[in-house]
Amino acid sequence: MSRKEQLEELLKEDPRDPFLHYGVALEYAKEGKLKEAIVRLEKLIAENENYLGAYYQLGQFYEKENETEKAKNIYSRGIALAKKQGNRKTEGEMRSALEMLE
Image (cartoon, rainbow, N blue to C red):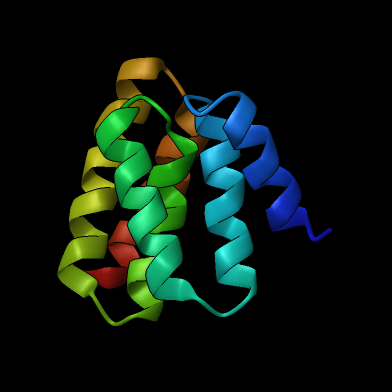
C-alpha cells in the first residue's frame, strides 16, 4: 500500500483531519499530479482557513504552474494569517517568496 493509499484510509476514519488532507495533496504532487494537488490544497484552505502550512505549499505549486497572480494572492493571505498567528518564520518565508515574484 502506498503512502497516499495509507493516508486516504486514515481519512476514511477521520475525514476532517486537515493534516491528512495536506499529506494526500503532497503525495499527489510527488506523483506529478500537480493539478490534483492544487485542487486538494485549495479545498483544504477553503475548509480550514487557519491551516497555515497549506498556503506556502499552494503558492509553490501555483508558481510551478505559472499561475503567478494566484501565487501572489495565496502568499499574501498566508502572510496575513502567519502574522495573526504570530508565526514569524512562516511569515518570513512567504514574504520572501512573494518578493521574488514581484
